[in-house]
Amino acid sequence: MNRFGLLSVVLLFALHWPALAQNAANTRTPDDIVSTREMERINWMEFKEVVPAKINTVLLPTGTMEPHGVVNNGADNTAPFGIAKHIAKRVNAMIAPTLPYGITGSMEAYPGAFTISEEAYRPFVKQLLEGLAKNQFRNIIIVNGHGGGQTAVLQSIAAEVSKDKKVRILVVNWWSYCSDITKEVFGEDGGHAGWNETAFIQAIDKTLVHPEKYKEEMATANPAPGTWAAYPSPSSIGLYQPNQGYPKFDQKKADEYFAKVTDKVAKLIQDIIAKWNLAGL
Image (cartoon, rainbow, N blue to C red; front, side, top):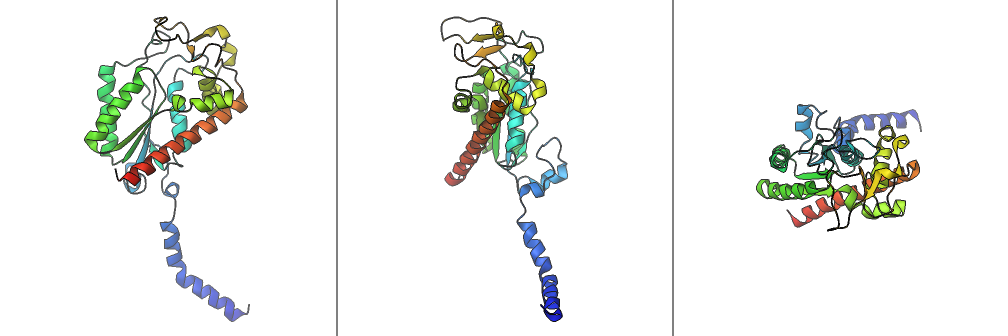
């Protein structure tokens, strides 16, 4: 190319540069214009710019404080927050601060455990969901880490707030929804603080796992309905099936489990939102 030709190309590029730059700006992904996905870390002015114009979905991790064998008492909080952090970009969502206290139940007597009565928990969660709706989130995804009576309460509140505030709410109990992945990865069923939940925490932060404290005698199979019940629970590891789900601390399987669980949860959220949109809800 001669000098005249090169000069022509340079001038042409210079003339069209503003338009090219504007087009690039208009096609940027949300992560290019938001400094953090965590609501407690974002500034209010940036929040106003991106919600709901570019992000209208929020992930709310919920859990409780109770014993979990040889992992942290806050495992029911660590797990859903870990899921939320891993999938927030993929599902284009903000992450609300974790609600770390819940309806604990039969493990309340163990050191470090807390429980909130349903009478206190229900109105608090209701106002929390209403606050997320007030902040213009169209899709509220509750990523729940604790079972027992808490699951039914969350579903009941979700239905009420969805109807009253005209928002769309999904409640995901990750360990239950992904029970098929538990059997796929480990070849057996899991349990409360069993191989599946222990592995999930191990994948998130292995410093929270203490294999040296583990003894097989710490685990008890959950009783079949109508057979027996003990208060407090005799074990902090409750197996869903007899002789299945004892923790084995395999890092490779832990990482595989985390990847497959988070992938399945993300796909569910994307699918539900797409179907809400398709139905015009």
